[in-house]
Amino acid sequence: MGRPCKPFALSPADRKSLQTLLSGGVQQVRVVLRALALQQLDAGQSSPQVGQNVGFAASAIRTISARYNDGGLERALYEKQRPGHAELLAPAEKQRITAMVCSQPPAGQARWTVRLVVAEAVKRKLVPRVGRETIRVLLESHDLKPWREKNVVRGGPG
Image (cartoon, rainbow, N blue to C red; front, side, top):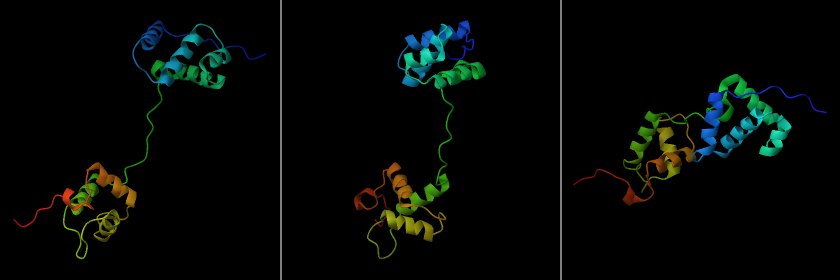
């Protein structure tokens, strides 16, 4: 025998919001499943029953219920924004590297390569250290392909 259900009730406004959300347009699957779980909890079903209906574990249903009680409907349906990783290069560093790539390659080099850009950026002290992949992504985001001579804009005589 399981533990008794904690009483759960949606406010009338939240009930209406859930109905609008579920009858509306395209939503993330997670959001729809959480909304269905909240509706079923409001109808008086237990967490294990709702978990079986929705395809979540009973503990996940209890978590959704607790998030609703703590922070309301938005907190129960949507996840918090995750911080992600910090930018590896500051905007000023990106500009300096891009400007360097748009200039002439070092003496003795026919064109810029990603490895050459990395070496020169560190040598010229534009950045303390940088990886090849970071430079590749930076160049790709600006649609620069310095290893293809025709795609680089250079001011020349004439």
